[in-house]
Length: 331
Image (tube, one colour):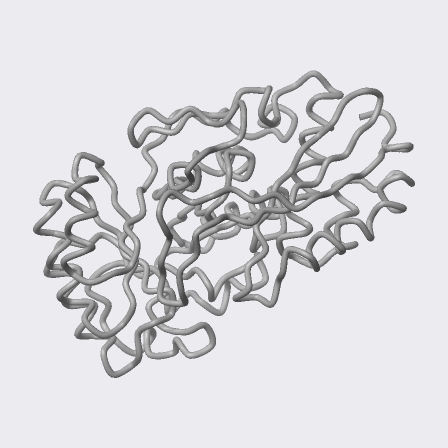
């Protein structure tokens, strides 16, 4: 873009109902609350969406305020590169970073991957999430999704061996990954990992609380373990090398696609496998994350599949296949 001056910035909170409810170890919710940033210049508008995460002290209102506080900087020519130092990693920076990339791509007449010098993403198989519940309820939900090749199972601590056994019985042919969302303890860690290994689980995500995961370095892990809440951006990677085999990159944690792509490169250099993950959100959140999929072993971009409705021009999903965004949506 030849000039970023006279760019205007608008932001708003949006709400999308979830189909049923979405339950993890920290609770349940029935709607996805997102914050959208829009940057406009010369009759073009770039869009970005984020999901504030209470786990990190974020709220929709505070996130909206943080974006709106950047109006003067954006109007004065704030670039995507300068944004990385102007705002901390998190949801607010993610929405603004993705909006700036979208605007820059539109102004240059390029797709975002060409603009950023990254491989063009193709269709990928995404995980489909089974919410936390009783073994019987999870088995029933799994049976309805057993045709999907990759399932992500939310676990919650006590009773997890019974849950994963019930899920495996209901989906004997699906690849399974599980997400404990920090709900396990040192006392049940090895027992739960063994139960997952016995069920043929490929990957366990964030079994122990962030900051209290030292035990992962002291045990022989029977299957791959992935960091989620323990990893945010590039600066958090190196200390995790003895504890985790993979890292879950989420744009709401990294603070946008710019850092997510840099983090993916750094993670690969350190020997980590990569999962590209998401919050429950619309296709506008998933679209930038598709640019990380060429480097990812696991793709977990099923947010729109969990909603009662997606936004217009949403990503194309064919079963569990997700396709790159059309320019009418993003990038």
